[in-house]
Image (cartoon, rainbow, N blue to C red; front, side, top):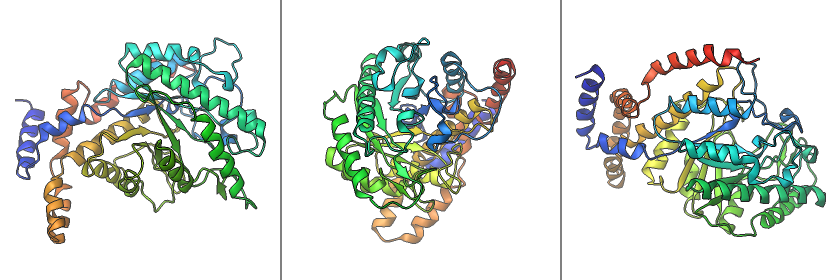
Length: 419
């Protein structure tokens, strides 16, 4: 018996003392697909040349060598990252990652044809796809407003783009046999004090109604709307606030996207799930790590991440919560950033699954809060890592630190050859 097997057997016995079935937890975990975000691999640049992302309040800081310069390079980097992550996962694309063969294709006219390569690649590699309209970094977004603009021509332009994006998402879902989540986020807001908070929100609601007016089979496409507290260049006012999109999602029964970096630093999206899911059918999460602001740092095994995972498992929400990632760090190896963030998210879910939730809830119902707190603390020092290493071995990926050896080799052989 190997050291890993021996450690796992001992850990399994320890968890069994708390009536936790480790094998059952790992079986559930392997069926969870995390939606990785393509924009970590190229610093949110995409393959158009129509605008500057930094002007849209989206900043990927750093200049680490090896950024993916082409769709083929990006796809290769994604596959490299996924080869080091246990389980089978998804990829979230933005519309600006269209492949146009050098032809000018307006965003309002984008079609599934510009994503055929992505769809075929995903089919060949058993990867589900999710999609996002790109309502930023474009001359028609230079005012800082899109769907909520005072200019009806600008509103119509982005309405057309979002409608086109829904059709692309539906084509992806139909081709791959798994629903595509098409998530709408717009940057609309003001840097300084505004005299009128009402009108842009009325325009935004009207625009969204036009975008979503045509029903699409949920077997192919699921619609989501994403809120935000503030942004760079929209520090004083954001039209698409949490209250706005919560109300819109409840009224229209679409998915609400909660991004961990889109709230006040003292707010946690884990605390919102049990309330939101009373009134909306499903939720999309964008797991991120803000440091003092929505800075999109690489996700790590932090307390907020563990709280998100615990809330999903304790609330039995696995069939109603879609877990996606959203960070972009150009200061470190970009492929490693994907691996760190995704593995941390999966670790957090496994950690939550290995909790004796029923016992904790029983203590709570019986008002034995002392035992509840004591057991929560006891579980933090259980031999979790032995279970994680064994799970990685089951999924044919390196456990713990050993995956970095493959990242270093890939950097030397592939990334270092890029300009």
